[in-house]
Length: 125
Image (cartoon, rainbow, N blue to C red; front, side, top):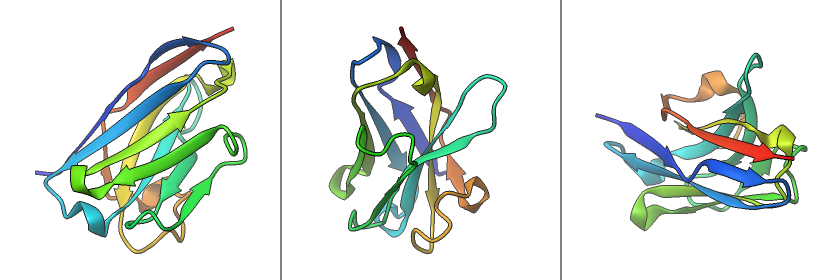
């Protein structure tokens, strides 16, 4: 049974930092590319960042570029999202997803085969 479990969310003041983790089990983790998405109340789930199966390639939404960093540790079956300089507009539930076949179309949520349950990030002003 495939499981993706996000953790590390919480409440932080604007300008602060959080590190999210996505721990995977039940799949050949180093075969999958992993993406982070977020969904604010009343909005569509949107792409945040993605990383290739070996960490050699990454992609970021313009809204987070320069503030967020995605990384992975295949020995621990875990992907991380380091979020710095957080803004109130970053408030959302953050989800990780796993997809095959490279980073092509990594920004499309329907490309992802597996999803976690999400972790809440709240940034106060």
